[in-house]
Image: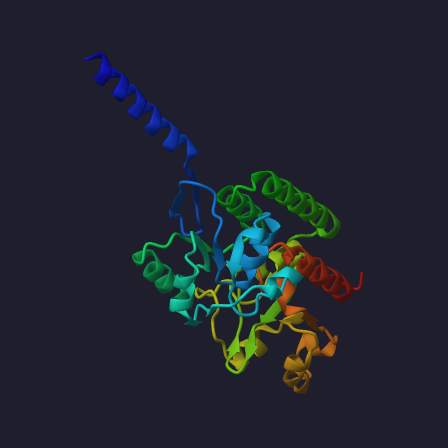
Length: 292
C-alpha cells in the first residue's frame, strides 16, 4: 500500500509540474494557445507578425517568414514559405514549426484552421488598435519565453503612444479634420473605423469619412468620395502619384488646399511596433493641414 501511495504522489507531482510548465495565452481570435514549453521553431505568415515577433525578443527562434517580411534587417535573411494566398504548405511542414503566427482575417482564417487540422499550433494576429499591438508583443514573448524583453518593449510602446496623444490632442474634439484613406484606386478601396489606420487618424485629431461602413475594407464609388468632400486625402506610399487622379476635381477641399498626403505604407499598413512611426508622420501632416 505504501508503494502505491508513493507512486500516486509521484504521478500527482508530475501532473502539477507539467501544468505549471505549460504556457498559455489568447490570440486575437480569442483562441487559447497552449505550449508545453517556449516555442523554438516559429514561422511568421505576415510581415506585421514578423515585426511583432522580433520586437518580442523572439527573432532568434524564427525559422521562416512570409513574403515581404523585410523588417528588421535580419528578417530579410530568413527563408520564405510564400504568403497566406500562395503558401507552400509542404515547405512549411518540412520546417516542423512549433508555432505559426498568421494574419487572422479573410482567407487566412481558413488557412489557420487547415494548419490546426495538421496539428500545428497557430496564433492568429490581427491588432485593431494600439493596445492590441502592445499586448501582442507581450503575448508572443510569453509563447517564446522572452517575457522580460516583451514587457520592456510593450512598456516603451505605451509610453511613446501616450506622448503622441499628449502632443497631438486637439482642444476641440468636436471638430475633427475629415480624412479619406485610400487603400487602392482601382477598385477604389478604403477602411472603416475598426481598422488600425482609423485609430491612428483619431489619435491625430481626425475622423475617417467612411469609418461607419460595415466592411473592414469597403469598395466605394468616386461619387461617394466626392460627396464626402474630405479635408485631407491620405494613402500609403512613398509619393502621392496614386492620388493624382483627384486633382481634376477642383471643388474637392483636399485638392483646393493641396492636402494630398502619402505616408510610407509599411509604417501605417502594418499593425506592428512601427505603427507609431506612421502615426507620428500622419499627425505631423494633419497638423500642417490645420495650419499649425
